[in-house]
Image (cartoon, rainbow over all chains, first blue to last red; front, side, top):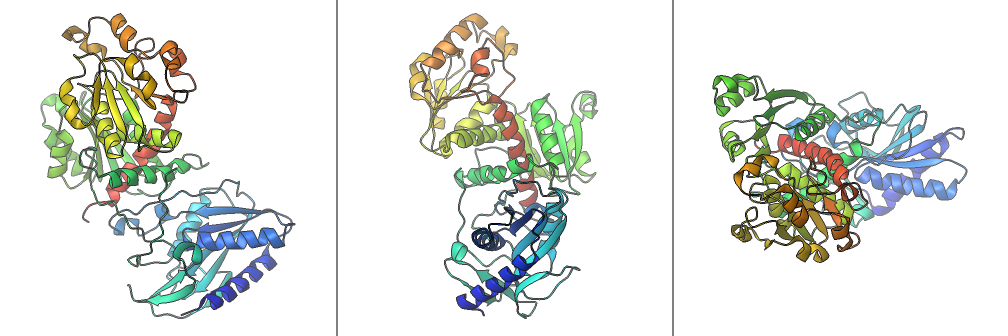
Amino acid sequence: MLSAKQVQNALDKLYRQIVEALPTDRQAAVIGIRTRGETLATRICDRLRAERPDLDIAHGVLDITFYRDDLSRRRGAPLVRATEIDFDIDETFVVLVDDVVHTGRSVRAALDALHDFGRARFIRLAVLIDRGGRELPISPDFVGRKVSAANTKRVQVRLKENDGEEGVFIINSF
Amino acid sequence: MAKKASSSSTLSESRPGTEARPFLWTRKDLLGLDELSAEEIVHILDTAESFREVSTRSIKKVPALRGKVVALLFFEDSTRTRMSFELAADRLSADTLLFTAKGSSVAKGETTLDTVRNIEAMGVDVFVVRHRQPGAPHMLARKVRASIVNAGDGAHEHPTQALLDIFTIRRRLGRVDGLKVAIVGDIAHSRVARSNILGLTKLGAEVVVVGPPTLVPSAIRPMGCEVSHSLDAVLGEVDVINMLRIQFERFGSNLFPSVREYSKLYGLNAQRLKRCRKDVLVMHPGPINRGVELTSDVADGPNSCILQQVTNGLAVRMAVLYLVSQGGPA
């Protein structure tokens, strides 16, 4: 659906929106949702730290497995990994990063999870791909690219670090 | 730590934001390490790594088991195991019920199965069971729909204790495979020893059990461990020494000549520790008889990880409760 080049363009666009919104007067944190969101957050964070050394940026990772509302509907337990937020999020400006926003349920779970770590001053949602199809009143603040896909399809982002290739794919897997 | 990097990406996951991983836990019960594969044991340990982090948060709670009921059935007394399971269930946001045999319907003659069926009828999802009868949790697992977690059945198995021991070894020494572990004490009557031998050998460690011949029968060799009747002989060659508690209630039974003699031959003290490898790990499942199997300077010294075992026990039990309630048919 999207090539490696288009993924890069979407990520650049996302990055520019984030830089513009970041506050200069308070601590900011870029927190990725496992697994692809984590990779994207790492890339964004590395670039921010290289290009904007004046900003104070913390970096974290969130595993939302325990907070999912479909936990009891699934059978079998995949490996849960640790959440890594080793800073105080109280009063920070948090940019929550995920690869794709679809129903909004992952984001809902992530908001709950973040809430258990403290009270952030602002939380903004950044996604590489917005594919529509929300089931909850959740809307991303920064979007790399909008695509439209039927609800029965899955939009999958593949990244070098996780998958060995870059691109966005549509899969029949519902 | 030996966290498995998961790189494959199967497409069975239905939503973005999560990654499909090759291994899925599918058991509804945790009865013992006997029936678990090495892969399943590692999966529990890896899951426990994630739960360790929860205990470091300011809000030490996740909603993973919200709305579920965990019943703790202690037909046999226990303090620390019960508290550990209770806190583990609390941190997963489950509701807990506590049942102890004393002063309950068991005293009125009710059978174990009837007791459990009655409590299950109230809508319980997971039973944590300690029972003096070996195999009691296995029998219950066949008869009830709820998940059963064995918290010690007679002299048979105590899987979560062995898992937390192995978890602690893996965290402290970075691996299990290739290590040599001594388990010292009353092996014949110890469920902790049995579960440890099973788990450690499955993960590739060598186990040597040490104690007087009355407590360490040679018949244990087929479990895949060495047998030694001399602690001094094995000191220099082991990476871990797990000292079991001497159960004073057995003293009438001619298994021990005297506490003093036992302590002299099989107690771990500073002199013996000097003959061990410098980084040897000293473990004890508690409660310690200070001055009998362990002297205080060893129990509280830098080689000891006894309190870490307790801390890790919480993470391991959270992992187990979480996994069994996710596993099994709907």
